[in-house]
Image (cartoon, rainbow, N blue to C red; front, side):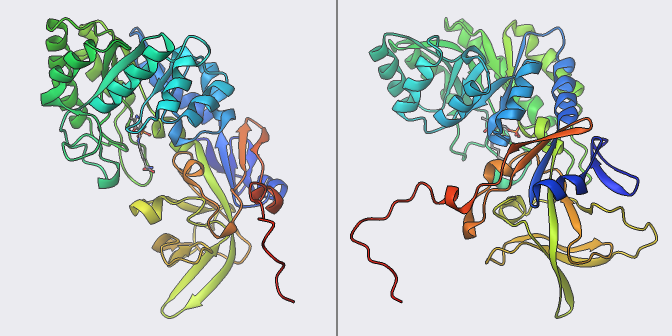
Length: 427
Ligand code: LLP
């Protein structure tokens, strides 16, 4: 990761020493690299050069508007899963015509917002069920428009990733089964508020192997031919997201190899192609900068207790996910590594970032960086234990800006009101 490297004995984000950010903003804080975002986006765009492709950034990975604005300036659209994400994408300057709306449970109110977005409505709804098709048709018909629709096909392919982020198996809640696809398209074609534009598929997240993609693309290309034979106008094929990144020692697919598969199986169909990458773009573009509150010796082990917790980065607790943890001050290369448990301050045993992790000697107050925390970290954060959301900082060369500040306790409680009948606490 060249964007986060040691220089003069200190870990930097691009040209900014992380201890400067900690001194100015405090910890915990998420730190993002603009150069990393640019690199990741353009590497994907270049891999698809010559193909008509819309890269719709999956905002669920990280919905900070500064990041979205930057990706938008590079040409990205947005893949959104709620009216909230849709409105944030538009606030960050993404044109509705580059927005795709996914999700198994879009409400009628959310459908209406998306149909009216920017007067023209969004580019595409990725529909996941027949009841959703019927509801969307009714909402669009009531507004006098037709909703552009791709139906999400569940190809029953095993993405070979973590169970909680596999989405393309028959038993998952997502999409319409491959075998029923033609019947459901036939139903959609009869609905007054629906205009069929394409086909959508997303098989899972953090894929490190191309084989499941290949199996999916083969099935999808067959299906598109059948759907066209049935008379449907399939103009866009949305291949979803899921390309993995390196957290530890994984070797994720090269975007060029992924694009080669698309060229082989999908491009000959002559459609516009949409991609929905999230983690691939932001995952390694961010880290969580945190300080050691205490080094606690315990029975047969040592705990590093950090000032960040599972509320800031839930992935280890939720998926047993591995994140590298490194000191900000470059460790002495001769220093011996000793296993420690790296934990947060939250009142749950699950608030653990790593168990028995070999680490160089660390003292109270030392700064650490939890790496690969650009995706599904700030976006999955909570205020559990009344811990304020950690601020976010965007680095660009030798400058940095706070792109979300830390809220005060008054701001955190600003939405609460006290019913008049409650009395004061007893003295
Ligand atoms: N498109 C759809 C329809 C999705 O459901 C997802 C992710 C994406 C695109 C983006 O996938 P990506 O390119 O980021 O892999 N919280 C989990 C990941 C959940 C992914 C959910 N869907 C984690 O921290 O690993």
